[in-house]
Amino acid sequence: MKHVLTIAGSDSCGGAGIQADLKTFSAQGTYGMSVITAVTVQNTRGVFGCQDITPEIIRWQIDAIFTDIEVDAVKVGMVSKIDTIHAIAEKLRQYQAKNIVIDPVMISKSGFDLMQPEAKETLIKELIPLADVVTPNLPEAEVMTGLSIKTLPDMEKAAKMIYDMGAKNVLIKGGHLENDATDVLFDGENYISLKAKRIPTKNTHGTGCTLSSAIAANLAKGKTPQEAIQIAKEYITVAIEHALDIGHGVGPTNHFYQLYQKAAMEID
Image (cartoon, one colour):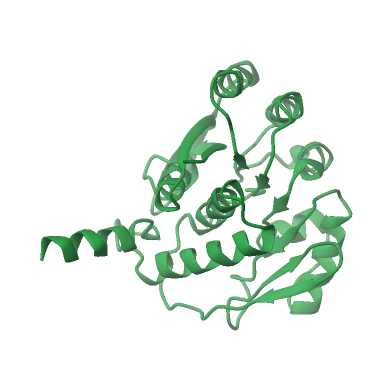
């Protein structure tokens, strides 16, 4: 079994962040480990507060994993402060981490700033060049590039700009487009459109975390970036299609839908 590490924030309602990452790793048949960068106060209605973990503790958590367990892939999610980003980049370089997926989490669906504005340039300089795959959504890609992204050609232009920042593969997620949820992958040579039907549901909490974690898990299992992304997109589509109507706001995706279905069939 492959071992996958998530470096991200904690979500108290379990739909996003560390909790979503670990569920996804398990659903993809890998063993999940975590380094917590921040503790958020949130539920399905929004994010109401955040306590960052000190850079020293983040470094120690990373040391604890890499000095004991082989790490086959790393997903990096919420990194809100400059010092946090420096600590993570330093350790990923020190341990020559492989199969790194960067999900540049910046703003929650409820509009809460999950990354301090001054940290954007540090993320671009320190973490993006380490990424085998980077997975911004449209608002995040706009922040990173300064572009207004409304169309597929806009997405391709943004993907090329982010690729030029040092990432090996760039996946611009098109969930914020008005039509079908088409993502654009750029590998430095080719633009690949990955299409999926738009699922009519409000329950999409944690979709970005889940997709990036599924990509990391499949990279760990030896898939190419394009293969890992395609498998992850199919997985998140099913998870959204069977999302859980939990709470009074934006409910979470169903990370274990297929496992639950299998268990139900065995019980019957």
